[in-house]
View 1 (spheres, rainbow, N blue to C red):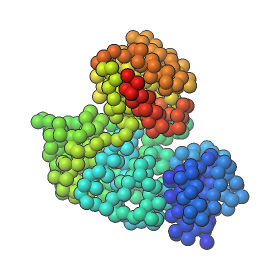
View 2: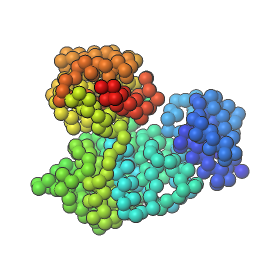
View 3: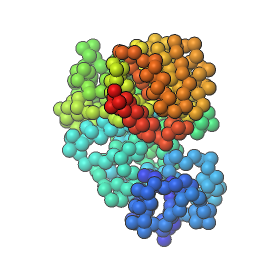
Length: 449
């Protein structure tokens, strides 16, 4: 019996352990931190051997195969020891892919991944396709392959997940955009990050499809340097050479995905803003390539309800609109939020800086932002960069203090936008935790009026 060791006891790790058990492996799961009770209960119910708070080397380094959760960096001592011993090390997505022949729609990019993934899933569900949602959203691919199999999977893939994928093949691959992100993970070398993203194209054939934003300078530059086997479906705001999706002169969205073509007014799209136009194009193209009927694509693009923590309207308090964009964990994501925001915006920034360059958002900040509220343990970099660029700036170190500063600065008609540019891990457990607490705090303002 082959021994499978799983590092990380979250959604992906627990799913991999269950799939490993079902496929006859001797399974051991190890998490250096604390495993959530939801997952320990699952592991116990399956009779699986696990540990938390440590990595016991004698139980790990005797593995035939190791599945690593994406959040564990390659610099972790146990990962280095595994690599030095020559034990194969793969991601949960790779492991799940070993045991299924289902079609894979795989979506990556620095921004818009979750929205595009959820929108694609929404369209395919509306079409009556047997579809699963996996990756950074939904249940893990490995768990679904083991216990809840589907004919098609829509998978959101981060660069972290792509790092340890080798034989996995996407039938449809989407790269929405590539802007600096997670550079602390990639030796502060942008090319290393780009290379990780482009791993999504591995093993594709001419019968597969690659969807991408053709005006992204990083993507277009990389495409000049590599050979792509898949058929190309580029999209752009206006029609360009070879555009498979674009907006025509009458402001209609045109999607040409092989056998299926869609024509609908841009105004009918459920999601507003330029970034969401691109997300809608990518999702629509994916569905069209899968031969979903144009009527279904049109309807689904017009009735999608959006993604929590991404430009999510929370409430209006004393005439001030509050928007939760906690999912904006990098500078480019904040750029899209500001591009979609009115003037007199109060912008909440801050968190764990990942080597950010804030100059990208500076023109929009100067145009639209009346005040910046910094919310983090250490706001020195933000204060240094933005002081003098906006009429007012505040230094706060908790959500309560940040909300209080926004209340002081805002007047009727203003917008308060939480779009932090940074990871959440200095004050919060995750961007979801940050966004949820922000919404609760805003709604409490309403209840205490």
